[in-house]
Length: 106
Image 1 (tube, helix red, strand yellow):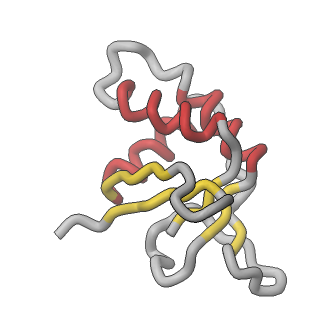
Image 2 (cartoon, helix red, strand yellow):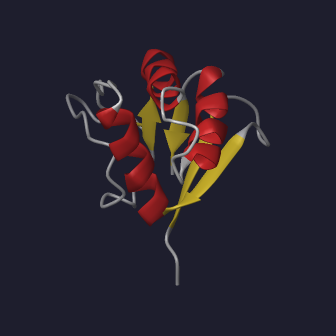
């Protein structure tokens, strides 16, 4: 069984979504980090006072929020991945999704 990371843009039901296998999620984050992204940290979707979390799927019971500014920084970093990189197509799709702003990761 594959664990799927589901990113849902804040907004109405049926809003933009980006789904990716957990293993690819970590590869995308690693690519973004390697290409200059400095993460702000994800915030719990249902605000729990004072808690800020990372983007790990280990806390899979709780949705997390990705800010618009952080989403756009991820997009900028992923756009610098070389065209010959094996993950370039999915990195490009995630970058395009992140251009629209923040997500909650469920």
